[in-house]
Image (tube, rainbow, N blue to C red):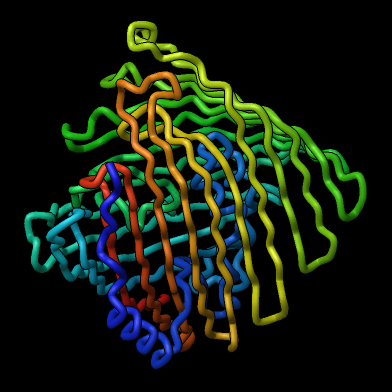
Length: 448
């Protein structure tokens, strides 16, 4: 079946948003950004890739150190916290992600965020970040659940150092209802719906052994996703995530290593989704100058269906590959860009596996100390199925486009304003599964 192209991008909306951005001088949002800190740089290519590499995501996030902010707005002992509250106005032109007859809406979103870092002794630290919000739909009032959301940035971690070892314990929890926006990096292949109520929890630890030129890590995390609506309970799952790598700095510019990751995935309501996954391959980090960093990796990946129904459904093991390349480039003090190219497999939504090839690019322009503007473009080629040998089961090939423009401006010591626009287009071989959506927002935040 040939795909029917979703609605084209409305030019008047683009022009209006560009005019708003130019008039107000806004830049890309960073939830815990402080009044005295510089504007955020472009979305890291490696960070963006996390959304497409669920096996490596927990360990990669755990490797990011909790650097003490340049200034605590609320000092507490030897540490401190930052607290902000804001009001966001959102316009969405296709709330229900439909191919035809879209329904638009205005959404009012009061929200707040609190983050803190408390040193424990000379080397250890406790860090947490909690974000809350509530979505009030003005037209489609049946979507108002009356329940506050817990943002995906919510995190509690404790870093323990002993000699050459560093152990980071972390706990991430969120509750979200929107299927596409404000959900972090993870993609859900949803359509014809406006609500996907879900709880997410991930707990675990990453151990790092630092021997200067040689750095080794090993991590274990337990992850759960629960749907709050029985319609989607087939995606409920528990995963055990394992990862390890060893990186050797052969020179100031080159680091080589080996990485491996695996998972055990159990779906209590959809046993045919049960799999174990494993991957292993080399990785190279190249820093030719202080302005350019490159990371490339890839290798063999195995996907094994291990449910009791696998044989009767014809589910056979998949021998495939993963690969990625990340480039970050600081052009000058005003411009920073990031590029990611990747091929990966992750847990599917309508089938057991979602194979994807991604190309994403972002650039941050900071013409003034208080102002930054960030365009983002991403193209994703997806194939969701139960493997190459199961043509009789669910199968969908589609291309998912994401284009965005965001901006942030620090109005003063306490006030910040954000604005942004995102355009999503899903072009599917199954006509009724495609959609397009524009989302625009403007937000004012007060930092206590």
